[in-house]
Image (tube, rainbow, N blue to C red):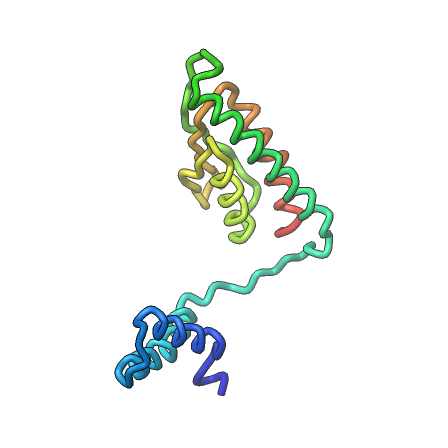
Length: 165
């Protein structure tokens, strides 16, 4: 059964969504919904990403500390960006690009780092060169490059290395 229907709950959900979106239970809608429900999971299996290996995930303390560090940085950055938008510092902001050398190579660790950086207001993941391990960021208020390098490498990358590598 799993060979022909790899994800039965997903198929049932797709069929139900199809019928709800069409607001009809006509025979044609049910047949077309069944086709989508049967073919959809097969299309989702095509990329087949490699299985994630969290070597030290049992060290939940690292993950919890990373969560609170990121949460604190997001709240702090929201305040800083709000102040910039409202014009409170009364000084000229310098937006710019910054290249940061990374030791992190795990694709799941890099994906987590991308989510962390992009969810923090004022920063944006622009590019990553996997050959040289260079991360390019755009930063809204780039005052001191060394502070940003220390923040990314010390606060995020170090913890992600403990989790994913």
